[in-house]
Each structure stands twice: as C-alpha cells, then as structure tokens.
Length: 111
Image: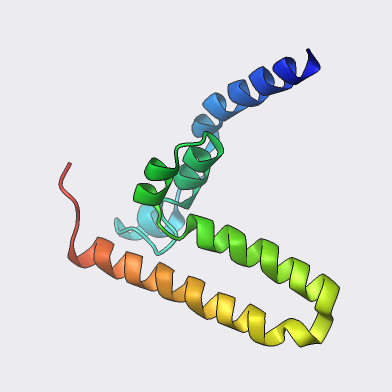
C-alpha cells in the first residue's frame, strides 16, 4: 500500500513541476532558443513516461542522461581507463545536440 502513496505523491510533484521551470537567460536576452532550450520540459515528459513528447521537445535528453550515468559509473569503476569511453560519449552527445539545434534553427516546425 505504501507504493501507491509514493506513486501518487510522485505524480502530484510531476504535475506541479512545470510551474517551477527556470527561464532560459539566452532566450530572455536575445529572443532566440539556446542549444539547451527544451531540456527541462523534455525531462519532465520523460519522467511522466511520454517518450515521444520528450524526444520531440529535446532529442538529446536521453543521450545526455546516458552519458552522465555511464560516464560517472565508468569513471568510478574504471578510473583513467574510461577516458576514451567518456570522450566518445561526449562527442556523440555533443553531435546530437548540435544537429538537433541546427535542425531547429533552419527547419522550424509549424504549430
């Protein structure tokens, strides 16, 4: 029974989390999205289990999270031997961020 309480509390927190998102300073100052715009909303959609919405909002969310988790784990367990793996993950994730940002700029979607 405590699991149901925890799930309902978690669900309630996720519904309210959208009210507390940080505004993007780059977008505020320039009016243009930065390469990270959409990450918070995408992460929230991912936590709610809406993978399609998460990917649509910010395609690099899952690669960023995987890079973070795998990079920390590899560094903790393998130390300096994990440098190549971490560098490859950074390059792949950076490439995904760059490509999705360029697509957002040059091929904006219509609402």
